[in-house]
Each structure stands twice: as structure tokens, then as C-alpha cells.
Length: 205
Image 1 (cartoon, rainbow, N blue to C red):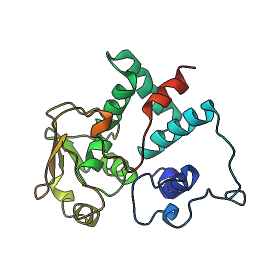
Image 2: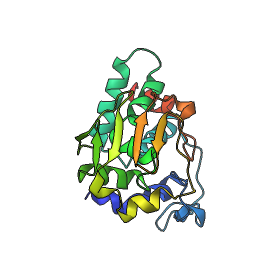
Image 3: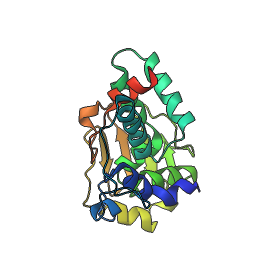
Image 4: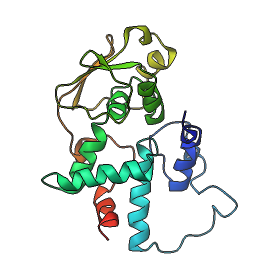
């Protein structure tokens, strides 16, 4: 298990926002950053600072991806035709762990990565244990039969704190999801405002 898993709420406090809209987030009680200097008055943030923050926020949202992983996704987005910021979101949302999270099979992106890595998921009937696997339109993602009764799955599908987006069809009873289309930024149900355009500006410097 990545040590990032136990530090997910530190990301919330560092950003000063409840990234995943979770009721247990410490930001709900303390909107300032961690540490002894967390409550200091903040000055005006530079353009670079805004871009860096946007990158850290988006990277953190998807399970605190490593810089190397995130930059590779950005490079792939640059190669695609059209708006790079929209392509970046599309690539992030079609990762297997992101689809598993959106389908509400698990409660957090961190749990989704671990769930995939432990072999609890199939894609089109074949076991895939890589969270970064790129799902395609029409792919059928299913929780393996022996994993459908796991407590984390049963509890997650009942969560009322978030809904399943319309670019993923989900059969909650069968624990099966289908990627209907690649989403645009406006389609993604982020709990906070994401600014992928600033991420593109950060890497384009």
C-alpha cells in the first residue's frame, strides 16, 4: 500500500479545500493549513503559485499521483487533437481506478487504486490489476464475483455523498459499470473547482 493512502486528509488541509466532498475531512472544521504556521495570513499568490496549486490539487484528487505519472498523462494529452486541458481530464477520468471510484464500488480514489491493484476488478471479463489501465468507450468494468460481498464495496454503493456521473452506466446490484463516453471537464462531478487550463500553463512555461 502506498503511504499516500494514510495521508489523504493532509492533501485537503494543504489545499484548504475538501477535495472529495467527504464528511470526515478536517477542512470541514479547520479551513487553514497544517502545522504551526497554518493560520498565518496569506499574501497575494503569484501566477506561478496559482498554476502550481492547480496542478497539486488535480494530481492529489486522483489519489496523489506521482509527478512522473502525472506528467506522462499531460504529455499524452498534448499529443491528442483538441483542447489539451479537456484531453487531460478525459485521460484522468478513463483510468481504471477513476472509473471504479466513479461507479461507487469504493469510497475514495486511494481505495480504488488499491482495489484494482489487488485484482478485484475485471475489464471485459479479464482481470486487470493496474489502476492506470486506460479504459475505452464501451468497456465493461466489473467487480469480481468473490469480491462483490466485501464490506468496502457494500458500504460504498450506499454512500449518499456523491452520485454516479452519466458518462458511466452502473448496475449497482451486479457491481458492473460501462464507460459510455469520455467526459469533458463540465461533466465531471468534482466537489471543488478544478482548473486544468492552469495545469497546462504550468507545464508550458
